[in-house]
Amino acid sequence: MGNLLFQQARDAVSQAVSCSNDSEQQALVNKAKNALLSAYTNSSTAEKVQLREMQEKLQSISTGEQL
View 1: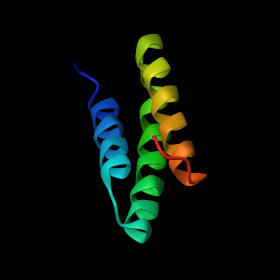
View 2: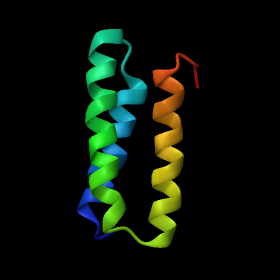
View 3: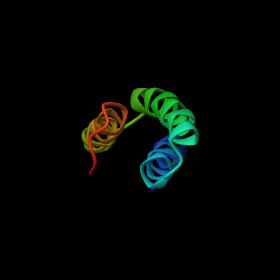
View 4: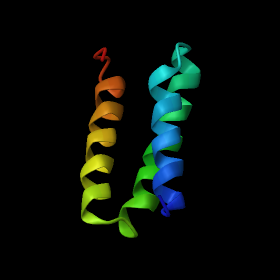
């Protein structure tokens, strides 16, 4: 896969989802949201679908829902 920003966003979301420390997790969620925004502009249609799914995961973390 050639889209480095997409890969970075995916990794950032993965770190945020797997973090168990609440204060650290919020910082990782913020970092992941920024990465998603950066990746979105230069992504293909298929990548944009995946980015939206990742954003939904982050929103569920932010609202306190467990995956």
